[in-house]
Image 1: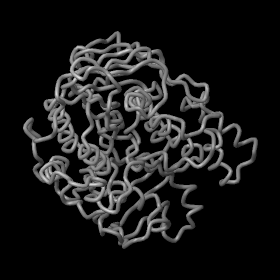
Image 2: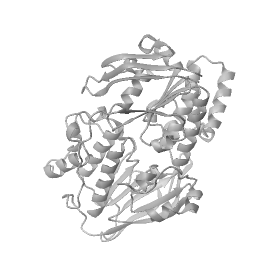
Image 3: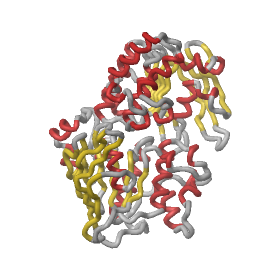
Image 4: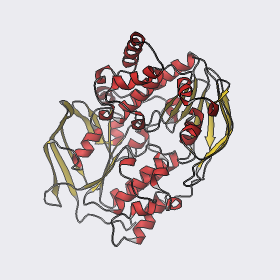
Length: 473
């Protein structure tokens, strides 16, 4: 499994906007791991593509420098041979899902290696068991949660036994227990001589990896961001309200995704929804937004006199919401008389001013999420905003910007509800909901929920000893 990876002055610029990554040099040998970190948009994913050989084989632009994999130049290796030696797990694992079932996803790479049918079967069972995916073997990869997709992406890569592994935000969609288990796998691979590059914002989970070397990409400095104020001018509801959900359940493809959820949510609050991968957090948000059929009832009470709640929702995968040629056109889409003050405030508050003329799909994952949020807030809903994993791809500075903006919306009278595996972000909420497969285990003030050891044990989530769960924003 031992491999080597070397980069000599490697840099890249995309032809559409000339952004990318400044030249970088590094050298890694078997059993060594490198953490690449930096601001959102500093070029981490681009560098990962260079090191894995997708650049220049699949992405075209201006590349400088050389990448050497096991003492061979990657640009002179056939891509089929390169993928045998280097495994890449994308930041958005949905991009890697090509087959109709989990087991076929794993077998696909093994078939390309020319393994015998008997050997493939043994390897398949090994990785299904190792990554706790056996119960999903017949499921479509696209029916899995984001965290489950991340585990599948790693399983499919590890099944091929590469000696170099490049991971782009591999922990971003994993719950805390799954992230700790994931890092345990990485330690095992390193002990067996694998060479590893990790791009990651949730660095606290990586502390158990011995002798982890760090490389910071500077990219474009983050300007001093606005601290969104209560008097931002953002439209406020006419009166306080409550959202009441009773016995809400969702069944899809004969699988019970959400079971008998009842809860009350008040306006003017920031609420975090936390739970293990696959417990139905995204499904609950979609049901509240009216995007998912369900049984049970959801209505608005008090100041709005009943009716169906109206929310804007920002999806976990922002690519499904972005389709205009520039950031400006995306945010202002189908607004005949846009409020210029609100538009400028959102650009400043979400650090998007410098990207007004950039195609949204060329931005980093964190930047895309901020554009999707700005677009939603430019079209005010009646009751608030729902966000699915809003801190994915956000560095600490931009995560603090996000927290301040969500608080400003709550102060203006909105209800803000977000799902997250980021416990540092969850700690910044007013209230926290712990969701398990059988429903809500605990719902209360965030500090009290964080200290409820029994509730965390019941939902199967670990709070890492090395992580500060208090809000620093």
